[in-house]
Amino acid sequence: MFKLYKKFFSSLKMQVKRRYLMLWKRETIEKEISKRRGECLGCGECCKASFSCPFLFEYQGKLLCKIHETKPEVCKTYPFSKEDMFPHAKEKCGYYFVKNNDREPKKKKR
Image (tube, rainbow, N blue to C red; front, side):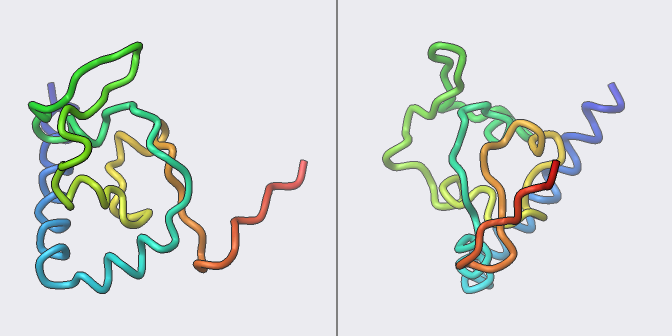
């Protein structure tokens, strides 16, 4: 039960911060999102962070958005930075971030 409350409040805090940045610091989001790579894997962890989104539906094991073409900007930009990613979604999310816009991260040596 404690884990559920922790997830709820940490996600809610991040969502409030996201909305502030969307309204007042748009250039910060644009700068950070240019470093984003990868793609959405349809895990739905971002869409069920604090409250489960009413526009989610499951199809072939993926959570998809019923209003994908017209979904809000706050949804389209998730995650706009590494720090913006919900802690519970980090392991499942298909997005990652590079340090500079023009370089991919270095691959680990084996």
